[in-house]
Length: 353
Image 1 (tube, rainbow, N blue to C red):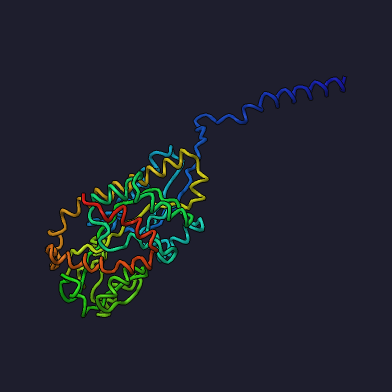
Image 2: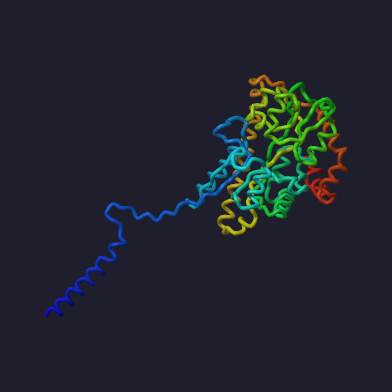
């Protein structure tokens, strides 16, 4: 009898455990059945100014923010983009490029560096780029020959170019006087940077000093540097107008950035994600151009409000700059190689709008 009772108790216990088993996995009343996956954080680094901090003449900041917004809104919660603006993650463009190459960051919004591959200098040839109509047609359009040229150079260096932005034209700011023609730089000390074409172009006009951007403000403030070229967002965002109150719209070069990924990392993503990142980068380029067009209309009134003396060269004065640039053809070929130089001029040199 005792043995039978033990068997009944064992059977009852087993049935009880079986009945309770499924209920252990069910949520308590009022408890959410949450299977939400946390979004993967993607890191984007850039030199663009934070649009929350610099609200005027900031084309690049809102453009980068638009990239983040597009990715997050169109990835079904799978991705979150953290943006590090204005050298807050990477103390130089060279360091940011290396972080992209090493896979430390997911995206870099910047330019190809001549210190990495001297061929990246090709788009610094003065007056190769004439206006935004030319840039949009021959460079920013993913089907254009200019886009194809730049994309090939990036891929040679292990980088995927998602989009090519139209950029901003560089003009000359100075501490002592307006710079109207090339000869006006003869008695100036001009800041250049590590780019063979930029240095050769301005080095032929006067004294130059090659230095990083981080030292520029102080160097102009103490008189070590008296002139340099910068685009309007940099002039405004860093309040250079306080120490360099002369601004000449000579438009020697165009500074244009690309949204980039490590090529191997890009290829490891699904076709769906590759399309997502590419479309987000194209949206970034669109917003940049929209911002540039808007702020171009505000330029004169803003400079007036800051007491800046500004100048738009006459056609004859501008032609002096162009003629000087054209006279350096052999230098550009030495830097780039004849094949790349010829290819660039076949695409951009004959454009008449």
